[in-house]
Length: 229
Picture 1 (cartoon, one colour):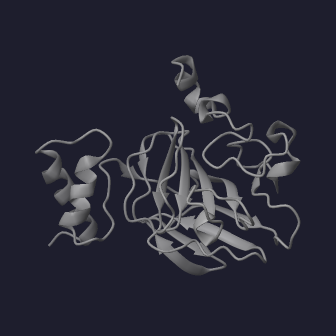
Picture 2 (spheres, helix red, strand yellow):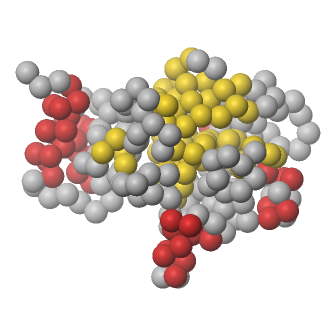
């Protein structure tokens, strides 16, 4: 008998025969068809090292990321950059914090290289994001401890897609931690407020540190800027 992953892919392929809708409508149907477990897109799964953890919002502290009028754990977020040689899928990926499983990404679309991906908890409201950015969610809250620690995103094949160590957030003005250069995996993680390009802004989840659209800082997205998006 085919394994579970094979069964899920067969379901998704069967549904696609009856009309793959723009924006992943057939993927939502596939999720229902497999009883709420991870809905795999039709492109290949993301592979080891293909995700850059670009920005981490650990202590919202007065910041309302999702615009629901409250600042709390629902405003925690991780900004990822896909750095792959082909379209890739993050469905079934798992988040690990200090070696403990925090949750699973149940559904995600096929993503192109250079896409900014905002990973939020299950209860975070939908975000208003520019072209070149997309929101996906865990089936639980992120649960990022203020005391610092390690974060790993593991793919459904069991490999580490991306990882980082983040420092303690003991107090002071709220500020996410972000790569000193957007999308550069070896750039140090620094307080967002400290970046000259940020002009004092505390975070830029789903955008460049300047607050502009991702195509202004991610080379793989330059064509979107050329098209005026």
